[in-house]
Amino acid sequence: MTNQNQPPQGGQNSHLTHFDHAGASKMVDVGDKPVSERRAKASGSVRMAPETLQRILNKSFAKGDVLEVARLAGIQAAKRTWELIPLCHMLPLDGVTVQFTPCPPDTLEIAAEVRCLAKTGVEMEAMVAVSMAALTIYDMAKAIDRVMVIDQIRLEEKSGGRSGEFRRS
Image 1 (cartoon, helix red, strand yellow):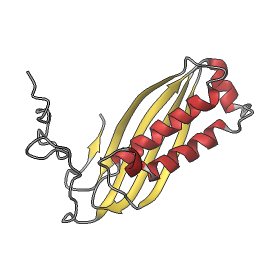
Image 2: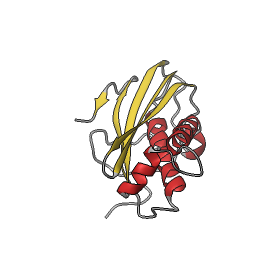
Image 3: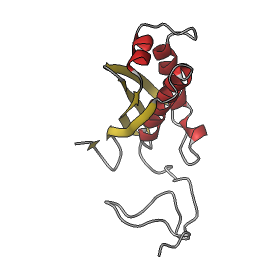
């Protein structure tokens, strides 16, 4: 039986930094950490009807260019991650890119990359960028396709900081 007041144990690093010794939530103090170059890439996808993908690619929505609106939403969301996820730090982002790759007949792949010089990583910013881009695509196309599926949002790679490099294999 798991004690709900204690953080879960296990995994590669069983110490969860967002909990204190009593299990209370805390924001990690990064004050003594050195500034380093941080980079993270995340990805996800939106599956939809083939006709929906074609309309998005043909830019035939009255609301505007779905992909450009979703790109701006992803960039803006990355910049505001600290407001959306309670224990994230406010970071001075140096660059955010959001890219789309159609995979006919029915999938749109989303990739985001975030870079900064900071004391903590930008993994959450990259995943929030992908998430918001996907949600914006759903919002703009839901009138014609309510069965779209947002899928596989995940960290692909990160670099910088004490934990070093990560690359999904």
